[in-house]
Length: 238
Image 1 (cartoon, rainbow, N blue to C red):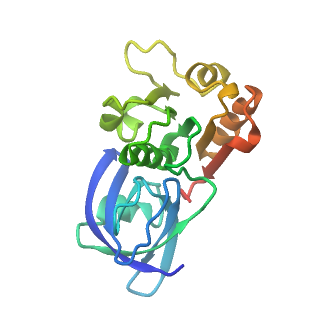
Image 2 (cartoon, helix red, strand yellow):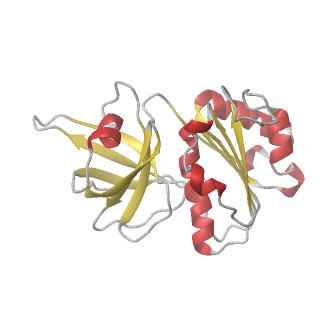
């Protein structure tokens, strides 16, 4: 893989701490939903640093979308979420990854389980399904601290035939919510996920602790571990 120059073509805020950037990348080879890219920044003195970010949308010619969570004291995310303007340039390399991906030709039901910013590659899969006109049934379970922390909230409120969305809250839930705030558990996955007998493909993404808990719950409910695909990230967001 080679580094390519990417130009910021647009951006939009998803939450007070997260922003989606649209990047034009000449020569971009395309990518699959679930893959990620490396982003490199280089200072005037030659110092460079890089981080990995999942694609937030399916391939669209030479344009890619990345949703970036701002990390306090981070070296890359503060620039991307607070400083970068249309016309600015960064370097990108990718696409990366071939296991945590969904392809439109896949026919098994899909269960997506995301924690916080772990929804990003899962949203790329939902958007890829929509773009391909796929009829494969999807179920999304996403866990966030508060309603204000949900990425893509407006889009997820719009009915998408064949896609069921469940939002869990760990710190504060919206008024009228039947489920009190709390971490994801067996009851949540059993109620809102697919039965193991249907042999769905399960994608789990989020912080390490969340991913380990959700994956263990899926296996405890009878899902084949070989059909549970996980991706986790640490403080750097990589």
